Image 1 (cartoon, rainbow, N blue to C red):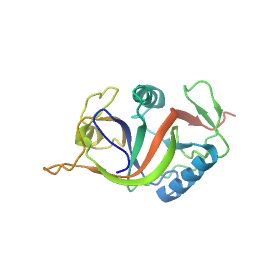
Image 2: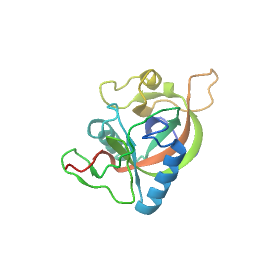
Image 3: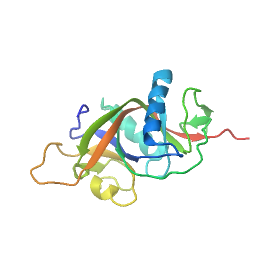
Image 4: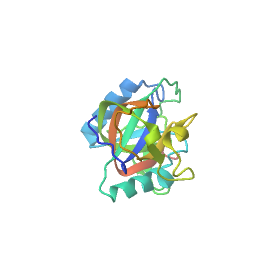
Length: 193
């Protein structure tokens, strides 16, 4: 494991797979190229568990103020997200002031996006039982209980040393990592007509 996960470290966990009719492998190639061209990429997503303004931005700011890098730790999964691969044309930090998405960056079939760089394949097991939800209505909840069921992303904090346990514990396998950078998470949309 190249990233260091220690107590007090913040991370954003996300299940990833096919999105807007594009395979995960194709998305990785495209996002890597976007980072090369623009210096960052916007990793699109949906759902309400990691809303840009109420969850991701305050979460990332609080850990950045502690001098920490926030990592996006992604668990590949089988998915069948068949939304139309329509490119978002604008992004907004606050949902009010909108600006054009740089031409080098494509966000397809999403409502929100994480600003990332340093996207890379990295293999390690993440014991969610050694994490807790870092903010929101479920703040303090154990990570593995929170992720159980239909929840596919969360702002988490490491609570215990991550090492080889004596007693086997449930883990998720992480295969893809990126650094979350300012503005952390944004709203995305097509230009209003």
